Amino acid sequence: MNFNTLVFSEYLKLLEQFSWMQWIVFSIMVNIFLYLFSIGLYQFIEKTCRKKQLQEVNHPITKADFYTSFLTIICNCLVMLLGVFLWKNDWIKLDQTFSVSSIFIEVIALVLLMDFCMYLFHYAAHLPFVYKVLHGKHHEHVNTNFLSLFVLHPVETIGFGLMILALLVCHDFSVVSITLYLFINLIWGTIGHLNKEFFPSRFNQLFVGTTQFHNQHHLDETKNFGFYTSIWDQLFGTYKK
Image 1 (cartoon, rainbow, N blue to C red):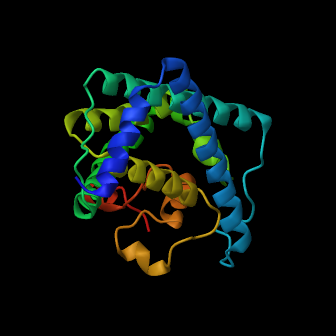
Image 2: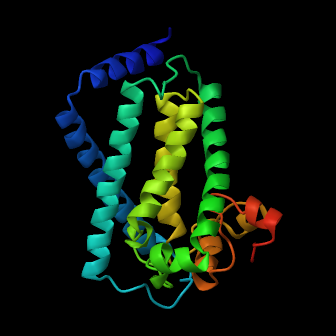
């Protein structure tokens, strides 16, 4: 067992000793930090990026959107606590013997598998009845802002969480791979809702779900349902340049 593996093994042993109250406080602290990190990253890129805005103005900030975003934080906490419950009851097992190569492979696997699952979930969210009840609120943000990523119906937030928990039940990923994937997910979601293109233009030819790719979805709700990539949209005929 190498040094890094030993460190994470000891870290997991520490987490195993947490009471449920400690887990609740921990999950709230983590999710508030990630929420503030996303907002800070959005503001930093918007102010430092010299590229032309994709749309003339950002969506206005409203109290209702703040309340919805706080509800998203609560839902993310619930998903995290459910994950802890599954871990404590051996439904989820974390691989403690990992290497750089295994972490890389696992992160790529999580990105591609979740991208496919999210494509299907997102497509289903645009079915007329489901869209009206669940997903329509998010698409009020035709022009996006720093809260757009978090303006989701609780069912959508929990649904996303259940998808990744299902993958973790099916395979023993390392805690490092899971952490990296979740961090990538947050950064990608933040970048995807910018009002300025973050990626170089050639990335549109590399199956990457760029800022402009997702911005196009907010303009045309029938296209570009992917999240990290445009692979599934191009395969199933829902891609729009």
